[in-house]
Image 1: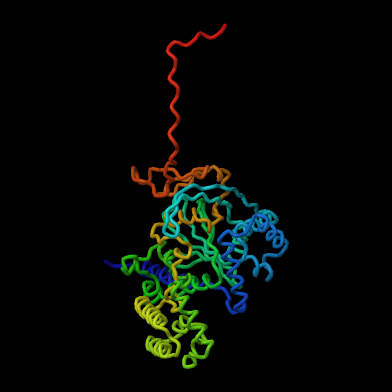
Image 2: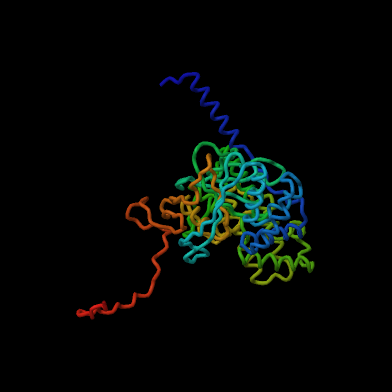
Amino acid sequence: MKTSRSLLTLIALLTVASQARAQVQIEGPNLGALDKAALAARAQAIRAARGQAFKPAQRQDMVQRMVGLDVGSAEFKSQISALPLQARAAIFAQKAATANTPVASHDRRLRGMLTEFGASKVAKPKKQFIEVTGDNFNLFRQTMGGNTVWFAVNDSPGHLHTLLADQGAGDRFHHNTYGVTTDTASITGNYTQYAMGVQLTDGEMDRLVRYMNTATTANSTSAGKTSVFGFFNSRKQKVTDIRCTNWATAAPIGDLPRWATTLEGRVNKLVASGAMAAVPELATAGGLHAALAAAPTAEARAELVKRVLAAQGMTKWNKSAVHRMAKAFKKELSEWPNRPADLVLRQSFAQQLGLGRSQDPAKWSYDLLMSKRVPVIAVLNGQRDANLPQKTLAWEIMGDISASGAVVPNSHYGDKKNLGVVPPERRPAPAPTATPNPNPTPAAQ
């Protein structure tokens, strides 16, 4: 079959454009701008905001303090990202009204099932839905983009889009899908998407951005995204079939497991006592995990572990835990050689929120909908929808979410059970009614 020159040229141009788009890098937070104490204070504030630890009156005080600041000022940028999403949504609405691009907003209390930290329970979270359109989308980025990743799904969730703003001085809002193709986020066309925002600490956001950027770079080479993305499931099977959803839910951006944190504390005490003088890398890097991540080769890590094990004061448990950490570095970095080394042993994105990994966009976005850690839902609309508060949300296999917030069955899977439907409440049996008198007394005239 003969291929025309014009068709070959078109294919070449499309390939170049695709590769250029794949090279787009997201700007992460500038961790060096703050000292260790300031970063810890910000992390504590963001975790409190994510956990809904602030009362409405406290959030209102935050709004009053921020609403008079210019969104482009350094003071506004440094403070807005640590505020709760509800306060930031109120600031967004007030700023949008001032700019004559008003934001429609309504509250809806949802009622569904949620599996959190391994336990299934009935969830009744209250959500604020805010409508974002093309004329205030940039303002949305300025107020709601800092330290927040937005997971967006279509009107009927069949695909996941990840929206992430530059975290430093950049003014871009990125759209990422499958973890490896990054381009400019925008609202175009007459369609609707629902975006669930999750607040991240500076450390978590830095790890997520580097994870995405590394995969973007790897995808343009022969290594491919599977040299960065992947995980072991509960059966210890390696999963590299990365789809639009599971790359994000499995992203290793969270905390270290408890045993590793305990080991770090014990090793740091030995460093402070002078017992680790033969391993100066520990003090330089700030811990054993960081030192292993900074080691340039597997041989360098093995030599570092050998010196740590030879130090005075290493108990049997300490030595066993050091071997365990070294084994994790060897295994994970051999399986995913292009993954940033400091992501070894990190909890997945889903684990950090107490949720389960999922390949299904409807299931993952439903879990975010029901989680208290996501109090604000951004409705991204090409055109304003006056019927938004009364709209039924068709959530595919999870059921339909009515205007009252109840999750009800739908016909998406026919007679199959919808996963998110709340089971009927077990009410006490009604009291028996009195037997009617067969010969009632005639009513008085």
